[in-house]
Length: 235
Image 1 (cartoon, rainbow, N blue to C red):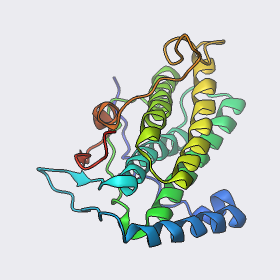
Image 2: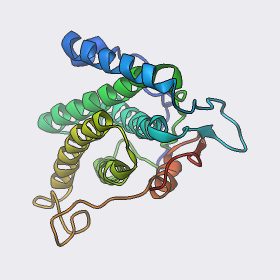
Image 3: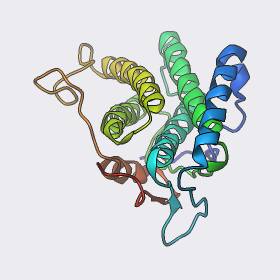
Image 4: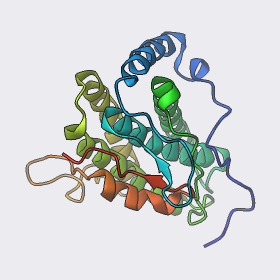
């Protein structure tokens, strides 16, 4: 597979400023939520933000750990779509470019939301590794996007039972519904009519759910930064 000649922004898209991306009104809403999380965080275990080669970046415990887990995944998705738009694949149509740009903006907004909400408890910026992705190839990009979106939906579904604060659970529900729309669109681009096939929806019509350990094991293939999820709740 051809390796890209240029380098990824290793810390994701630092150039995006939240107010310009999601609008001042939403930004203020986010900041209000951020203040509530920052206040509550004093009662929770703080995160170790050291990037230690032996243990990796510690997500922390409790709800803060789960929010950092989501923040890590959103960093990965935002960095991926930022590169997709910066280096568009051969033959991309105007409609594909428009909707993939929308997806990039959503993922950047999600990433910035978690960063602001977690404030001093947020993990640092993760270094990504997309060396296995051929960004000039539509098939390579869309298959990677499909993997990320399916993984993201399963991750939020799997983490829901671990969240104890109602407001955070409501927030996760709002984000996972957006991720599911992304997944449906990407699947249709790859194979028309496959928006929610039996590889992601079970016989009861329910989306699959994966534990943080399962998700991070898959996501680690696209991350240079090691992540330590040992303090996350498991039930």
